[in-house]
Image (cartoon, rainbow, N blue to C red; front, side, top):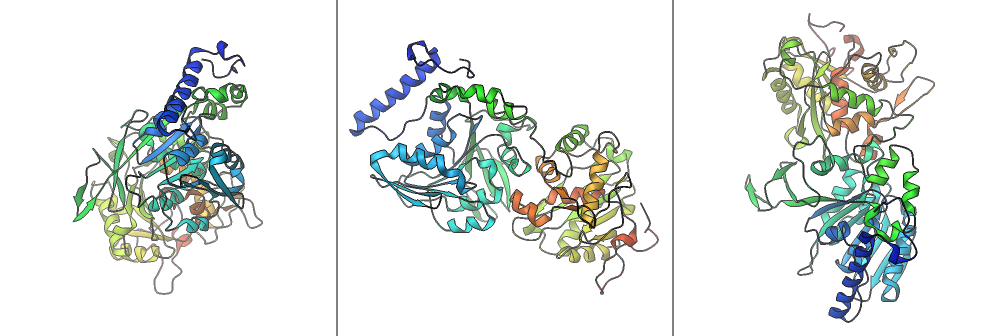
Length: 528
């Protein structure tokens, strides 16, 4: 069936697939009426929507293309399969259609109470469905400690990752026999903030993932020492004396063709007329289609992807070029991680990422740096420079590395700089702006340095996310705090690579703290 052509008003002229879907839906309704004495409030379309409705996954992502019945699945689950639901959109102003639809589904068998742009539907059989927005970082605190057996996210890529994981902590119930699950629906992400969805469901969505999974196939995961690890099955296991129970995850794709009612409206023509890559994303649910960059994005996504495509494994690379620098971005508590990036001239080794729980102080990070410098027997590793983000807890890391006799520089991104861009035209308001722009210049496909970056979805998102703005004192890059708010996590991977690439003279990165000397010392100091 061609999804771009509307169905005839005469159902006898419908294609066989559309007729079958409609008949199956009617059959299910008749079956439910026979069992309960009254029709169900909602029944899923035959195909992917039914598969998603009955999926045993603890964590489900459904959709991809526009028009596949994503929002309707969430409301249908809430009205028929769950007792207490929290259904969120990123912005409360986006709830209008969902409110109208839940009123339509419940009709005379529920009571609606408005609250701002959202509200709560209570059905006559005791189900509670709350529709709300979660736009600002503090909004998630409103739902802290409030249990729901269904946590539903409409347009999941619009949410920061930490909102999704935070609210999932209260996905529970006290009702015997009631299952709990998290379900997110959405199209392919169109901004860097949403690319965490591709990373989280990589076996289904990332074509470069080595461990691919089929639609609807369950994969099992567990949290071990702050890191998510893959498990073979859902059996509980013991780690360091702790009993750990894995959870299941899956993805089920859906397209407009799977929703015969919407196909009949001619919506396919609207999607077909969209420009690329939006057409491929919304019509076909293509997660590999390039998103549209912001005009104020510092580093174009295509430049980062090109550098990752140039990258080859270390065989022959680490002996060809000496270790030039190590960039260290230090965890600042919470879910942050300490990230190390090792650079061999233009080739960057895969990032080392360590949970903040295993790097509680400067000495712990210094040990990781020492191991990174020595475990592979890098050529001339004693001459490699270690660049540390020395704001806050990073100062203790700088001190600890310095005590070990390494060439270490305390990089304070907020400091001013008189550096300009490669064309000697643009000025910068602080060292952070120059550091990111310097990496941009090096990634330029025409005038750059042919950098090779390790394929890493998180690194791609981190380097593609920051935006810039011109000011009287020079270009300023979006702050790390604002990036954390948009991404839902700290851009540790991106900052580590920027630090590894940063090439400055010793006097440009002096440690201004009164209890220490310059950040670079001894005869090994010098301009890169």
